[in-house]
Length: 95
Image (cartoon, rainbow, N blue to C red):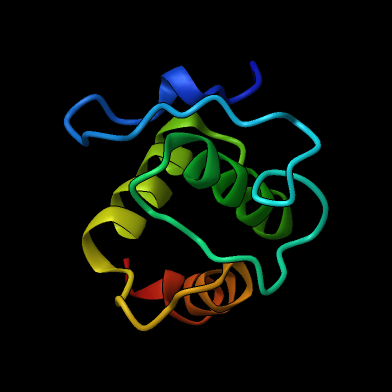
């Protein structure tokens, strides 16, 4: 499978396209207490790739589905990367 890129995110969802350096904590390392912005393309892409790796998701349509779930279902209370990741892990089977 080809690598999932930011440009592969669903086109029907409007994202902010801020340029974030690859060594920025928002898009590097393991998910942590760094604030998570589900409106920011680079941050969503980062969380998707980390989640996909943990769940061994490989199909592009599955990764797009993660983006759609984050956009439509992730509760506002999930404010950090780790909270968003834990919520996805706990609720993924519902989608």
